[in-house]
Amino acid sequence: MDNPGKRAMPPSQQDPASSPPDGPASASRKPHDILAMQRLAAQIKQWGRELGFQQVGICDTDLTEAEREHQQWLARGFHGEMDYMARHGLKRSRPQRLVPGTRRVISVRMDYFPPNARPAWEVLRDPGRAYISRYALGRDYHKVLRKRLQKLAEKIRQHIGDFGYRAFVDSAPVLEKPLAQKAGLGWIGKHSNLISRSDGSWFFLGELYTDLPLPLDAPATAHCGRCRACLDICPTQAIVEPYVVDARRCISYLTIELKGAIPEALRAAMGNRIYGCDDCQLICPWNRFARASREADFAARQRLDDRSLVELFGWDEHTFLQHTEGSAIRRIGYERWLRNIAVALGNAPTEAAVIQALQARRRHPSALVREHVLWALQQHLGRA
Ligand code: B12
Ligand code: SF4
Image 1 (cartoon, protein in one colour):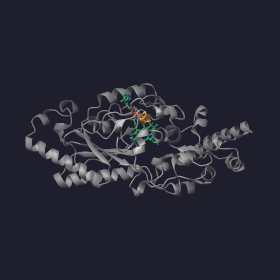
Image 2 (tube, rainbow, N blue to C red; image 1 turned 180 degrees about the vertical axis):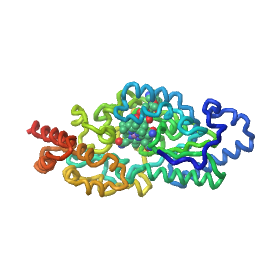
Image 3 (cartoon, rainbow, N blue to C red; image 1 turned 90 degrees about the horizontal axis):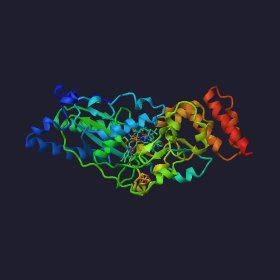
Image 4 (cartoon, protein in one colour; image 1 turned 45 degrees about the vertical axis):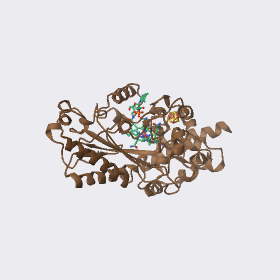
């Protein structure tokens, strides 16, 4: 999983039950300690901005409500095959169970919208092109954010000496959105992504769990109002009610997380989306305020923002690996890459190049790929 802290948190804080988030320690804290923590919090935010985070906020570890919602979501089976969402018991919603001694969470966000990509709607309306979600057009965000968080922790260490912390970006059992909401970074929109009033929702989240008794920020308030644009536009109707995504229907899950066959009933609705989906964020009025990322790492690479489906389907494994080096796309592997493109080719206009590309993969060694290719060819036959 993630980076271990610089030092283990002190034993006195290791039992969550005997050390509530803001328990006896804070009650006995002296005024000069409180002032010092306030100053440190201001500095952490300043350092965070200097390191390229758009916002840094601080919250405690109480996720009682989110825990209930998370458990309900699991009980309804909305996580599908993502066993890791259920595997860690209550560690995900109880930070002190994941990292004993945690008192505060320093939550950060970093914009990712690539400045150089072909406009999303243009690609989505061009059924011969491949649509790849905006977050995956540049370098894998896990590495980028984790390195910065590590630098932030190092700055704090230089300033106050050793302290307990661990850095997380997505990969550990952490409820990132509810924490960020509590830390004042934005509210959870009806599409379930975090939205900032000033910057929209095209940003990643990361956090430092720490034993420092830093002062808390005010939680963000919600501003979706009566809007339901994201629920209406979702191609597969995956947002089954406001704030609740049935991942099993979400194109992001179908193209990235799901290992086996994509359910036939959902294939047509996927259109030309071959890796992730952005529709709920593209339609969101708050993204009118979004800014392009300033990170060179998040600029679109290898022209992945504007390639034809036929061209991508023609890539052999070596070319796939070459063109996705350092990108999150690599995680799905070549077989699922072909599976996803086969579906998009089944949804593409019936043209000689499309049929030829599909025919060329009819005898692909993978049964998964062959089945999707066959389905795609049947779509064209059906239309003919
Ligand atoms: C599992 C997961 C997925 C799954 C499931 C999505 C989901 N909504 O849970 C899939 C694969 C579908 C997915 C897709 C995407 N993901 Co994702 N994903 C995660 C992950 C690992 C866990 C999320 C989670 O805890 N889900 C569990 C359920 C229970 O939580 P939830 O849906 O968020 O529901 C919460 C609220 O809606 C709330 N709630 C429920 N009912 C109610 C009612 C009211 C009134 C209110 C106010 C709230 C509320 O309670 C729930 C618990 O807090 C996080 C990283 C992390 N460790 O947190 C990234 C993360 C959420 N993903 C992220 C991204 C970018 C995406 C995509 C945009 C990628 C893409 N373009 O394809 C899509 C967006 C799809 C969507 N609309 O959600 C970012 C989001 C950044 C942001 N601005 O919010 C995260 C935070 C990763 C990161 N570190 O940046 N993802
Ligand atoms: S599209 Fe509308 S309902 Fe959905 S998250 Fe944005 S503001 Fe909220």
